[in-house]
Image (tube, rainbow, N blue to C red; front, top):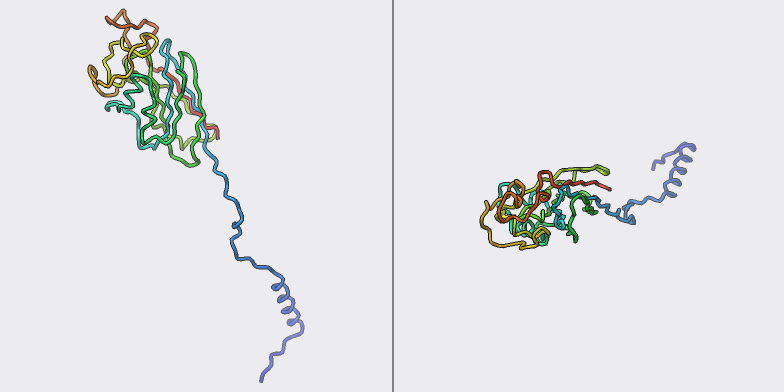
Length: 237
């Protein structure tokens, strides 16, 4: 039988190393087992719209988020029934009922000429939701304004987006300037019959007053030119 003789110095070093290892507590478990998940921080936006017209109240605006692949309207295309209801009667509730809508806020009051209205809106961090806003110029047959499918994902905290908004004609009602839901006439709003117009969305050419069109109830102060409103979107966090 052979024996391995160790140098006393080496033996001492081995014993010391063994003691050190024995005293160590090795934990191969998950260090994050007891960590609480980080809270989700939403992206917060302030949205405001200013009425730039002289005497065209804007109906209570509807604010919506949805996928960027959808639009609530497009110039040259036929208006949906939901958009028709908004453009003829100032009612945004059917737009709110659309399956594509992810979040919404419906204002309760109109935006008077020269006035501003603001909202705070939140979406989940990293969401790719797009923003749409729609409101009617109520002293018209079927004029509306707003923005649709505006992307929000690329806005940084503190960044401000400003945009002047033009007026559109829904193309769903003849512009007789008399059957108006606004204070100039307080008459009929939405009518399901589409007759007398082109049945497609187009840029509004402006209204005609009683001095220019027989039967019109409008006065010169009701006329408008583009832009009719100003939109501001600011990312707060």
